[in-house]
Image 1 (cartoon, helix red, strand yellow):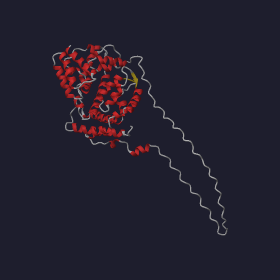
Image 2 (tube, helix red, strand yellow):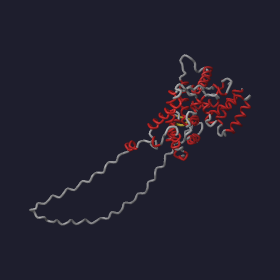
Image 3 (cartoon, rainbow, N blue to C red):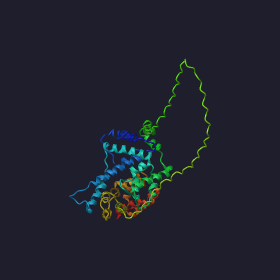
Image 4 (tube, rainbow, N blue to C red):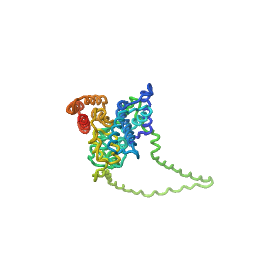
Length: 397
């Protein structure tokens, strides 16, 4: 890292803080478990909670991807629709024991410190999907799990052209250039350290590499050669007369004119990344994104589509939902809480409960577009508002 923070020390602190917090929570009740809302408010450091949720969703997606069989047709529309409803229901039944939760928490603490110490590392490891090419829309999806340095990441993503597939390595190098020109927006490392220190004492010095280790890795200059002493004159025997030799005539001094000072060589101009290539064809996951925008409830079908193309969306065939609370998947719920309700879980649940109690779609739409939009100052939230309105339409259709 640029400021020479030690990765082993970051990980050691993450494990130590996770053990401390889990002991405080689970110690009096070893058999206790955590659900989704409890995870979102487990620590006062919002970024730590969001990174735990990000890991949970990755594991949830991996579980769905395992639903394959050579004996049964998982591509059948009715089967996929039923699986989508099952996985959405399961996503609202998070149950974490201490044994399962503590490693997730330790990694979330470590990742929070890494993002604060070096945003470029956080961009590569926490925001960029592990695939050769990435779209702006994919990056926008990942931003929901960022709190530290979010303005920096958000500004970079918004600077990218929409609907274009970009090479992963190109995105990584372009982000580093963007970071250099927007350094004034960086979130100071000491702020994150202070937030964590309130939970378990910590200072930046505790996380830096040892000076001895740093100096050991630096090149060592070769020692200057010691001067060789002149040999002592051989003593003359007393019996022989000492004849003084005339001193040699010094050679005339020659004045050497000073060498001309070379003109300064201009520094090479910084490399400019190549222009963003325009897509010649729409990649598969871009088609899937277009389908996802038309769906109301994301779930297992998204993962299945990511591997096999299809032209029909499950939302088009989905039946009427009885309640918004049951129709909203874990992915959408965290998205709504973070983007529409400022991370306040209880306020989100209160709003959904009121929407479920309203008599018709017109009343529900008016409550969203007038009351909630004004209360939470929804600006540039059209994507999330439209998803909520589509769910309302499904409930009252």
